[in-house]
Length: 308
Picture 1 (cartoon, rainbow, N blue to C red):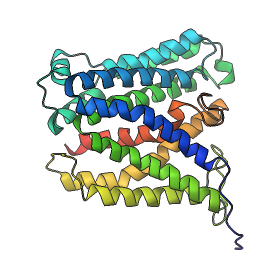
Picture 2 (picture 1 turned 90 degrees about the horizontal axis):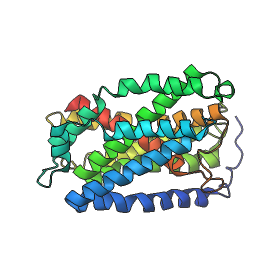
Picture 3 (picture 1 turned 90 degrees about the vertical axis):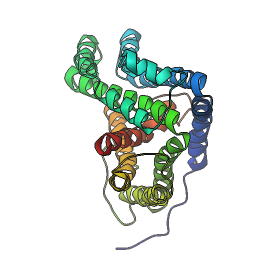
Picture 4 (picture 1 turned 45 degrees about the vertical axis):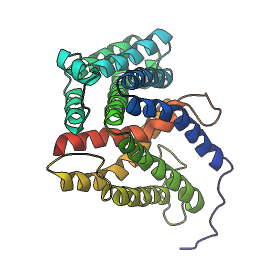
């Protein structure tokens, strides 16, 4: 095996992460307010994240649908799940001025979000929308399109809702979770750009520019981050299975960041697009920066339900 000198960094390397930084600059103030301003901050961050969810889904489904009305309906289904479950005890607990937003409450809200039976009504609705839209011939059939749309709604909604719940519980836990995919993406892109195809010649159909070297770098550096943080900070998480939670976090969270990136790369490949949005030419829109982050929050929520 012959090795050539590593490639130089691509010209858009710093622009790529400047864009990601700008997105975080927009999101972090809302999260900060949601955590430190208690009652009104909680309401503000709920509305802000709900609007961000709607726009993100609108970005994505705009590539699936030929008519704006269908795009709007699908994005609205995400908001429908985000607001639910509408139960008196959950509303009073979540938005009460006297609510003690401790770990038990955070776990309680996450559990009921995942157990909400309304989720099962969304799948047939997405199939109906796909069936009546006349763009299905270009996307390979309404059933496959319906499955993809349902998956996107499910993942996106649970991500934004768990983001709101966990941020209200502990702002620094959210920063930690967000830093995992950022680390994964940064070092995967960095070492993947420099050493791509130097050791492994594997080509990925869903994203030709991705490499095994990049995936390995993503996993190693995000794993180092998780291990270094998880054993030094407890984030006020109270569970009798603390060690199990840490082990699952170490094993699953670095992989979740990579899988999230792959999942949405496959969707982009299916739609034959580079980015979900053209807000910033060549660098996409909001959800192009939040794709792998969404999977980390989703997997962490599953871990929480498993160990608590």
